[in-house]
Figure 1 (tube, rainbow, N blue to C red):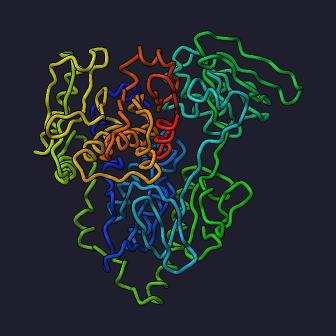
Figure 2 (cartoon, rainbow, N blue to C red):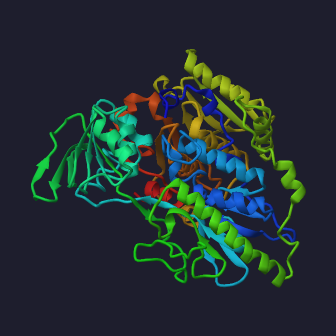
Length: 577
């Protein structure tokens, strides 16, 4: 990631909706008979899922991709990809953005929803999300995996306070400090090299006798003057008070233990020890191995007819982008034969296949490649989104007259110009202390505070979150899950929530969206206020709360939490203590 991107000075990145979930439809269009029926539903929007979507949609089947986070998956945060055939150098966000654009150009539909359950033992299968139940003839599970935790002493306690799992998100917090990188695979070495941009020194802790990645990449680490490497070594624990100041290790050959020098300013411990498949929620009839990976055959088929697996969630020898997209292509072409047979056996040749063909053709150029900011296509999409609101929304802004904060006002002015239902108001009062400027607070049409405020310029990865908050306030908005609603109705203390984010972090937006939904809940009693801060603009708050990772959630100025949170989980954390 370029330094200009890190500081969000490249305004093209700020306004780019084209690769974000804001553009995805909250509700996928209905099938020809009025049902939410698809030829195939792909669960997961990483490289495997996107590849499958490209192949199925190009064959003119009706395809829906369900992704609860940002389209692109884990690879989205990878800074450098140099081993993808035909592309000498790119990054994960650019590569998966192009894949998603290609899938859309063929007619694939996307929805930003979390899948809670699937029923797959019948010919017409069901996929249940928080908002609805979809029907489909086939399912491709491209679920991916999440970072594996090692459970060393202090790992859970210091997560977000020195223990981290994403160099792109948290590397900047360890500028001029010593960082330990645990792991010897591709991700560990690549992230370790990335961290040399910030850290005083990067120390690799490798359990094996050598790196387990390509020799060329390992050689880069060996030759880097900012890196130090310890092989056949494991981490045993971390220590500190409010954040990590020291770590302990063991040589797994000799049994000799050693400790890092204690550093009062803090150290970083980044763990890259593989991944855990995101398959624990799947029904028991789908076969998995002892580690939870899907068992598939050479056609990527699981043991359940019509259910296929693709990508890192499957049993396989190599987990790379190139193998993920290959899995997606194989799964799609294999499923195509299965779906074609069902079309004829169920007498549905016209029900789904080629459904909404004219609409697809209209949308074929929906996401063109442009360098403009707020280009005509983007303006059209945002205007349509805002015009669906039932009530007007006011953006009240506090900003100094310096260049950067004038930028906020200019951005909001252009945004407000896209709909008569959205207006901009410059606040001349001192209602928000100047040290918390720039800030934009969402208010209803009468100027009443909504309970949601963004401190910074809501662009980059948070552009989506901000627009969703605007639309939530304008209505009709998204319903909270039952558990969250119940917690909101229970008696108890209200919660003032501060969320600290980086505009380059792909894990932050979901937490911000969850907080916005809680703050903007239209129930009888508002119990949550949410203030979102761009961490780079508020160094004093960063030190005050000893923040070493984002997203960071501060509840009532006391409790500090870290990590991505869904609505129900966030409600439990902030309302139940």
